[in-house]
Structures are given as C-alpha cells and as structure tokens.
Image (cartoon, rainbow, N blue to C red; front, side, top):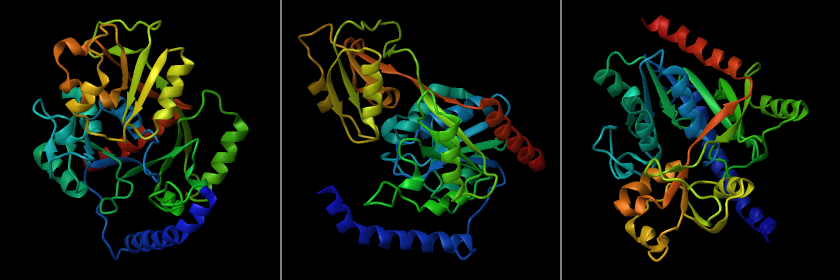
Amino acid sequence: MFFILRIVLFPITILLTCVVYIRNWLYDNGILKSTQPDVFTINVGNLNLGGTGKTPHVEYLVNLLSNQYKTSILSRGYKRQTKGFVLADNTVNAKTIGDEPMQYYLKFKDKIKVIVCENRVQGVNQIQATFPDNELVILDDAFQHRKIAPHLNLLLCDYNRPFYKDYLVPVGKLRDIRRSANRAHVVIVTKCPEEVSAQIKEEMKTSISQYTFANTPVFFSRIHYNAIASYVGDKAFISENPATVVTAIAKPEVFQQYLQKKGYKIEKARDYPDHFAFSRKEIDALLDTQNPAQQIITTEKDMVKIKPLLIEQELEKFFYIPIDVIISDKNDFDKFILSNAARAISKSI
C-alpha cells in the first residue's frame, strides 16, 4: 500500500523538484538577488523538513563563539503569534518568539542577543543598527532563505535518513533538492550512534561528496542526554516510579527509546505535532490530581512552552532532559569554525 501511495505521489514530487530547481537556478545565476551581510553570519540548516538537531548545534556554536565575539542568534520564530523583528527579553514567551528561540533566551540570557524576524536580511540589518558592536550572527534554519548569503553554511544531515537517499515531499522528507548541498561549506552528519565505524564514515562521506564541492569537510555528531532535571530545580526524579512522556518534537521515538534504554518506567507516551502550542487543556488532560507522586517527562524544548502554564504546586510533577551534541574530531571542527570567524571578522574591522 505504501509503495502504491509513493507511486501516486511521485508526479507531485517531480513537479516540486522542478519548482525548487528553477528557484535555486535563478538565485545561483544572479537573476534573483542574494545579499551577504557586512557582519559575519553562520547558518545552521538542513534539506529536511526537520528533526536533524539544529537547536543543539546552534547552542554548540554559541558556547564556542560567544566568549570571543559579541554574538546574536536570528531565527524565523516558527509558529510564533507575532510578526516582524522581535528582540527576546523578560517580556517574551514561546508564543511571541517561538519555542526554540525561547529556549535559547532562557539558556543564554544576557550572554547573547536572541532575535526573531521572518525576513533574515532585514533581521540582520536591524541587529546591526540596534547593536553596532555585534560581531557575529548565527542564523537558525536559513538554508532555504536564499535572499541571505551566509559567510558560512553548516548543513546538517540525519545519520538515520541521509539526504542523498531521500526525496522531496510528498514522496520523501526533503524540502530542498539534493544538489542544494553544494551551498554547504561544512556538513555535519547528526544523530549518530555512539560508535560509527571508519568504513561507514567513509561511505557516507563519499555519498555526500557527490552533491558538495570538493574538499567540503564532513563531521559526525551524536546527541548527548544530560541528567534529568526538575522544572523547579531541586526536586528529585524517582526512577523506580512510573512516568508519562510528553513530546512535541519531530521524531519523538528517538527520545522515547533513550528513556527506555536508560530504564525509566514509561507507562504512557503522548506525542503532539512538532512545535505544538500547548494550552491549559492539554495540561489538565495530563495531570492526575489524585496522584501526588505523578511524574511527567518532557524535552527541554517543550518545557519552555509547558512551564508557564503550570501553577506552583504542579511544577514538581514535571521533569525534562537537557541535551547537547558531541562532535567527533571536535578540535578540527572548532578550529574550522573559529578560523573562518577570525578571518572574516578581522577583515570587517
């Protein structure tokens, strides 16, 4: 049945492929204009509809760069209820700037600026007009935003569903054609298992190189799950007690598999669409008022949306697991990013 459905949908994929190809051709040949900002810009993007791990990789770059350079993150603010340029401050929430920008703001606070603007060129220009000493902008998910030409394009490729084996929607999960990988200055294969053989790495590098320019570096990363944390900070999670898992992310099964592997007693799992806007209705359906020992586990991204909906006595039932990424050949990767940043920023001074 699935095979038949793919055959039926394939003409739509071919049509969309042609549309995307023509759009990219117009930009590549200067008929549609791309603008490279004066300030150094790094984009973290992908060819997929989602689920490649952009958020922890953006956070990795912030930790790498923000101690040396005055840094901003610019995101579209997907599914936010506002428009235009919005600077994150203590008045914003996930509804006004989006869940991922809200996570950035809560995590880094005054260390960096977090801004949302659907027009990335306008957003970068306004950042520089508002903060003239800003030295670097990290673009969150702007690989398909061709109006802006970043100085450095990081392309993320899911280890479990690499773009070179995938197709454009609706047959596959790509939102951009494979050959768009030639805009990448570096590729990171994400969500790898803990051990990846040298042979598999070389095979993947060879497959990726069919779509990138020669000598484009390829790195490999994996998700690292940190210790479970309480919404209220010091409440201890009791691993012997059952828990409910609540997610609104692209690939919830990966998170759930990790919890099961670690031995958590998961009695229920409730999955919502990626970027789902939680309301009190969902909270009331989750909470068991007759069970003071109830435990609910969420992702960090969902925590920033759920926590503001809770009253004080409900907070102690909720826990989340922060994540970050571990990059193989970390020293080489860091050196690549830092040297590109230093070279570009020194030229702009």
